Image (cartoon, rainbow, N blue to C red):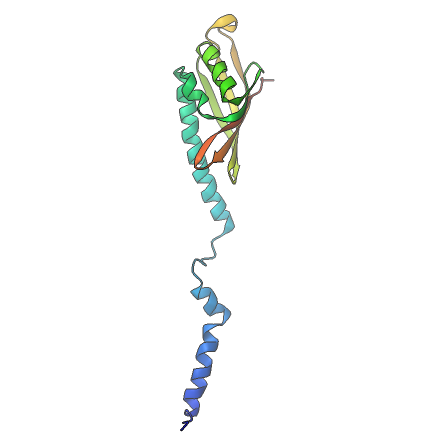
Length: 170
């Protein structure tokens, strides 16, 4: 025997499922739907990458200042490109390491200043200026300075230098 529902109960039974699938109900129920601004996500990403790049740059500066050629070379990827303050080109960590082993003692300290930074995906670029006081060799006492560009590449969870160019000053 089938019993008919009273009219108000039947109407309520039809409206409840309809309310559950309305657009506002779907938005309220969708996990992770907080309508976060894309700009905020980008700013957070850039801040995280910049923090990691700054840590890498601190290691780079410390290794350079303390003549630790092997440690310095390990901050570059195996396939890195390095254009020296003298304009010489070195490709690969082996050639870069050899350059640092033979020249780092002459170079003295280097100061690098970040003027611009940008990152996207697994790549970051840093543009700035450098000052290098040559302390040994034929150019002892010569100040070299100019713009420099460093490209960092993320492989796995590790940022290292993919290319670095020291340009002569104008």
